[in-house]
Length: 183
Image (cartoon, rainbow, N blue to C red; front, side, top):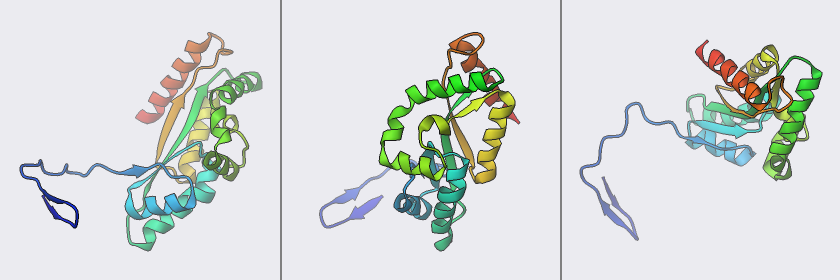
């Protein structure tokens, strides 16, 4: 590799060949300008706290338009959300949302996350979290893919009000995620 610039001259020999296939570059982008940058210069985006509605309404159209405008392939969209599989019923789901409210509250104070939560029709991170029994969590993950997500970054969190305590909810969440990934 050789580079001759105003301030630097670089000569590197013996570098290994680039990997084949190339390693994808994903940018964490939520705001319009960074989504444009991600669509123009990267292989996609990683969007934490973006639910299906936010992806479908804001993230997917903006990043895809940026990529299409310069003839790039459709970008990857990774949605990252907290996930907890709990016992069936509203009581267990409410308990999981209470735990999520405490664990992820800081994101609700940051402007970029406030905007993505609002785009998703929710006001706090706990409302964006994926919680419920196995069928409900599966349906919520399927909604993400239907909205344009290509990859899901699930962040399991334990819920102490589950029937067997914190370890049971985490084990159930991981088991379901393994099952969905294998399908």
